[in-house]
Amino acid sequence: MPENDVIERARRDAQEGKSPSTQAGEFVREEIEHVRQGKHGARSPKQAIAIGLSKARRAGINLPPPKGSQSSRKVRRRAERDLSKGRSGRRKPSAKRSHATSNALRRESRSAASHAALSRQAKSSARKRGPSSWRRAAARAARTRRT
Image 1 (cartoon, rainbow, N blue to C red):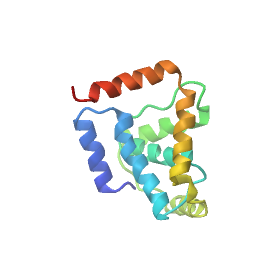
Image 2 (cartoon, rainbow, N blue to C red):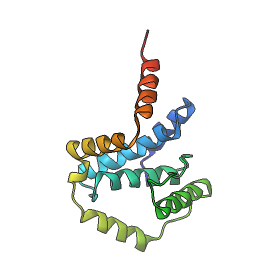
Image 3 (cartoon, helix red, strand yellow):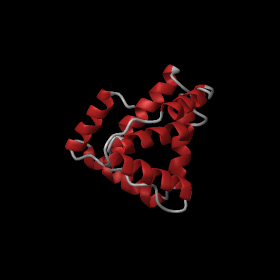
């Protein structure tokens, strides 16, 4: 369950008209922080990010499932399920399943949230996107600068 201040920050982002991925970033940030604090671990930075995105979808952030050949059918279907859970009412999660997930994550390493690991993940993710994507991102960043 995400903390209330995280949900509040995401809600503020939504009110300011920021994109769903920006709103979901709050949940990912929280998840990385949990790994760093030692609440649980993660097998990789990608897993920590995926957990954060799943929590965001279930909290009602309108983040569409990934499209294209980059993600497997299983991942897309899971994201669709998370999205529909977020849109429907809240139901109490299975305690047995919740404990099993927490215990499994506790056994994982904490190094997935290290500065170096996150940097590697960001670079590899950026490499997959083409030059036109880089230009668009740079143009968007330039528009936010003060004149």
